[in-house]
Length: 136
Image (cartoon, helix red, strand yellow):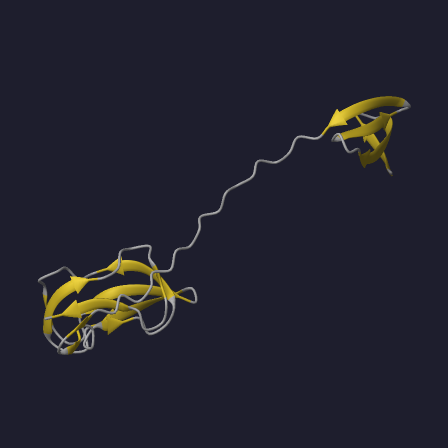
């Protein structure tokens, strides 16, 4: 039980607040007059679930199709995609923006080439070494 003393517009109030009962009511006494109070529950906010995409490793008879792919250097969230399928890229061109540890990281082409596929979308959460872009 908690007791409080208030002054509202110069008038004193003595308030006693009891424990919440199993039915959810609380007994509150104001200047000797008792009230049964039902506390409004705060709405439950549903949090978005994070979905981590697995590494889509595909193999052919000649070896790994993704051996020259641009991969995520660390876990993070894709916040920007500057590449498009069929786009000719030069070494150093910014292809993907990855947010990791509250910093935006520009992931760039390691050599000249042509974008074959983009394996992620904005908002995707990726693990380290996840292939992001493949080249022809």
